[in-house]
Image (cartoon, rainbow, N blue to C red; front, side, top):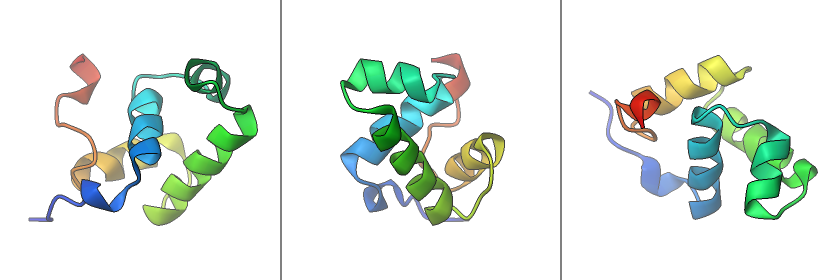
Length: 76
């Protein structure tokens, strides 16, 4: 069993990951957090690089497996 590693993400990365898991677009996230779309893209890129994935589906799967998202995230 893998250890929970959410302490390895910055608070902003956790926030971005949560918003991505809720189906928000980069533009939606940027508006909500009052940051640029480019900044959101950089956060997502860094998350994907850290988890060694290439798309959002893999990002969410890996985030679940590594304990970065709660098991019932889709129902929140």
